[in-house]
Length: 410
Image (cartoon, rainbow, N blue to C red; front, side, top):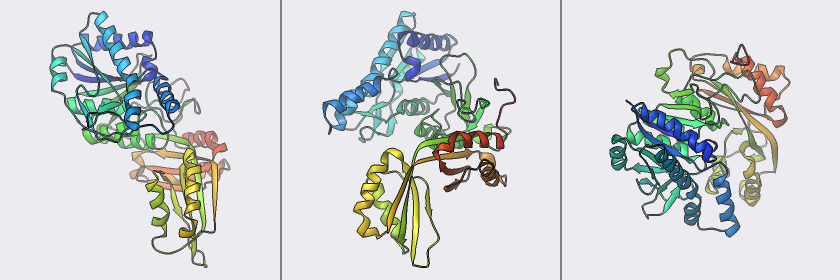
């Protein structure tokens, strides 16, 4: 017998027929003798609808009331799943975030989980009852409902698995695992049987949308074994595990891309101590997240150029802030480009292998693709290229690292 947390995303619970499908999967695990907790998202599209209601009600809204509204989507789903399970003769009850409780800080709309009280749920599960938990939400010390940010139900599930000391956490979604890249771009992409926490975290942070970044961070911190698998197909998924569990590690786990990037270059910034802090300090204060950063070699004139990337949606606000800082920063001009994409190769194998970067640069050069910015970590290399070359670059790199399946049907 195992203790398992099963999480189902919005497409998996999009309507009553799909909720019944979920209930059958849960019932099968329960009947096999396991202790089961289920975390559910809102029905597909429901959260967007609720957010729309809030924004229509008032342009400047109270974030505490925003959370009170948008958290209801998961509460509906958890109640419906409990009802369906009961109709199948299984014991089940729904739990909202405030009922356990799942305690969070008071950063409404982007709260972080501090603690989960599990004693009542563990007692119910030990007695054969399925605990159906509303994901994406918790409660602050002030007793207000909080939400964890978009994709937060993944984080709810992993946090609950850690608190319950579950044997593993199954994340059910509309894909059947983690692939070496997006199969829509590369039909010969391969599904991975296993991937390390570090690789999954890097892939999630650079564009892969299979798991939410914070959930992977939490799984790695608490050693929660996570399996990504399909709600709609009965086949094994991909295990996200510690590096020590993987016997034979591939050089590269996958190729990811992000097309929501924008590049900004400040021309002829004064080359003096503190100037970089003067640029990026105000951006951080305005909650504008900077990704790749390059400072060019100083010109003979005592100036330098500074290039960085942000999300495309933040470009207007960033340019406005930089204009207001012109007198402070004393740069000559700003050049911006929203027609860029970030392409990344990720793999723990590159820790012990030379030539990974050279292979990447050669593969792109052979396709006539110019690299604009480069950034690296111990297990990742990212480059910025013109957006028009995104798909060509992904296909070229996938082949260059030998990731193509021998048969497209694999």
